[in-house]
Image 1 (cartoon, rainbow, N blue to C red):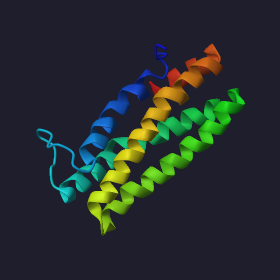
Image 2: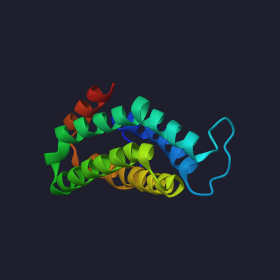
Image 3: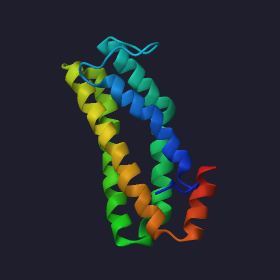
Image 4: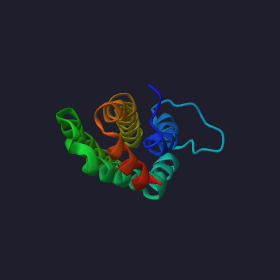
Length: 144
């Protein structure tokens, strides 16, 4: 299903987070111009969270608050997505004090990747199916 233009900005923002997830995985290859050592990866991940991902979560939650009641499935998934945002935020925060940084980074990577896939493969198609044209227009205005 082609992504509705209202959701396209959020979808495009997912690319950087997917790259981050790949970088943080255990035994990830070295990516040119990206950190290679666990502590450097952790600092990079926290910077990405503060500068990009935190605001992305805020925009998604604002969008979900506006459309969550369009269908029971959207309502249920909205609650799930917000809980995952809290879990991911906690994982990003835990990098500072982790005693097993390689495994914490890997857990964050897998959790972030799974979360993005859920939004791309389940949430966004569900919104396109159940939201009215007016609701999609509201999302578009909210994100642009």
